[in-house]
Image (cartoon, rainbow, N blue to C red):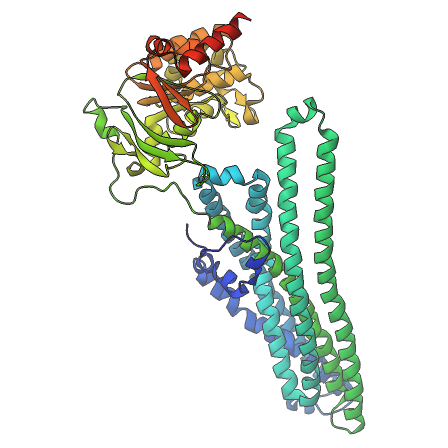
Length: 610
């Protein structure tokens, strides 16, 4: 995945100081995979450019022939009709060569471009999927969507419309300069000298365009983030009447984006206006200097006509080149933004050396023992949310985590599932450090049912199997174990009922039931319940409680609960406060201690009586 070399994060466009050459080199691995096809496309550039460069000469020879001036040797012994016929045939051949070469180039480069963009998008999506939770906590979803779609599409335009075209225009200009010099040095040098200030202006305006375009892309990411957040939270928006506030926020961001786009349009238009003015000056210069040479009989009218055409054609590809460079600047911005994502380090790494297989422990009847050894953790390095946790949960034991909000209960679960790694200490499962176990096997070994569960668009079966290879009988068995078979069969199409995005056609309780079946089918050795029954009504909770008894049989269970009445029968209760383990014991033992658990329990009793 490390295709892009490391890049430092930036805030004030310092990142733009990196050379364009280095940015292009980041795409070389993708281009190298299609080197043979690229070589074919490159080979077609020379005949295409040569054919286009000699066309003004052919037209100039036709004018000289009609005026009976000096022409090419093979035309001197031919009549005017014969000469015009041969020149027409020659011109037609150059047109056919140029059209054929350009057509093949366009097809193949579009094909290569789309393949490369698909590869980049795939690699980018895979890389993002492997990043840790800390990255997603600080990165807006809209920004990620912009980079995966809009920025990658811009790169596609660079490949399919810009890269080869720039090289083709460059070769075309070079071929015309060579031919012009062989025909008339003074006129050729005059046109070449006029290209120098144009080139300087293009470089300047393009650099300004790039800076403005980067800011515009950042504003677009912000705009998409606001849009995504507003749609995802539309219930809260409407319930709390934030429509006008959000509309104003969107309007102001949209206005900033428009102004940044206006800046890019200004710099792009400046290039076009400069080229238009210089091309007119070039034609006027050719007419003036050429007229002087004709008076002195140094050149023919045919040669002057050819140079007028060259003056037009020389600046047309230069104008196209400027347009493509504008596209390149947008492409460089896209590469920079994509590179930022590709250079995000994957903090939760797979073990490199020995990988332990937890399945080997099943055969020894040792399964589900959890040890936290002097574990310290914080989302920010200077602020710990878990402090020196040191406890053991035995295989098959049922424990509950309780404590006030912010005690660190959910953070412990995130560490156990290795969504984060501890800053100090280690976590063992069956005596093995979880950092030495593959993430796939670890998360199959641990089943988690959250308070809020996410459902994917697709049918019920897909939301239970999550794309893994389970047969229909296994799906039915999981539904039966968790007592939700009747609920699924009552759906319009049963197991094939389509679930809308985020499960909007199901109730919260129904979504929670599917989450239970999702875990049951994987038969984990450790089960984590994070307020898993909070979304259920009393009747459904009775069914689930019976299902839990089956599901928890001979399994280690960790239960996060706020309703203390639901955890009276667990083996042990761990009481946390501000990231520290204060008390542990069963329900009766903790009540006798008269500590924090006793206070929380009495508080809930008083609350329920009210």
